[in-house]
Length: 124
Image (cartoon, rainbow, N blue to C red; front, top):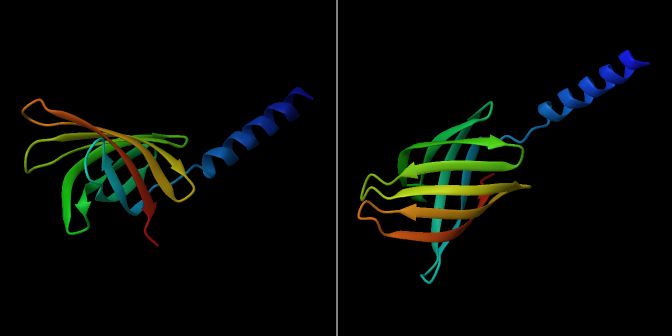
């Protein structure tokens, strides 16, 4: 009985891992800073295990390299630095269906900071 229970548990755990979310692909949507006009955001992500890498920026033609982060369950944490002004964007996102939604905190090279909401949809 114990063996059957353990085997059932392992089978269920492996099925969950196999069904884990994959954020690989292109994502497009909104970037809404607090107290400012909304803008756009675009990211190209590649997932390998729990590691996430890629590019991100305001649109598909303006991408910043060096995006790094991780995924655990439906939580995606990524960071990218703008080569233009050195602003570091830290994104705490949740995968909800074909959307990545959540909070962004950004700190510029001069110490100024901002907070924003982001909602990206998977580009099909």
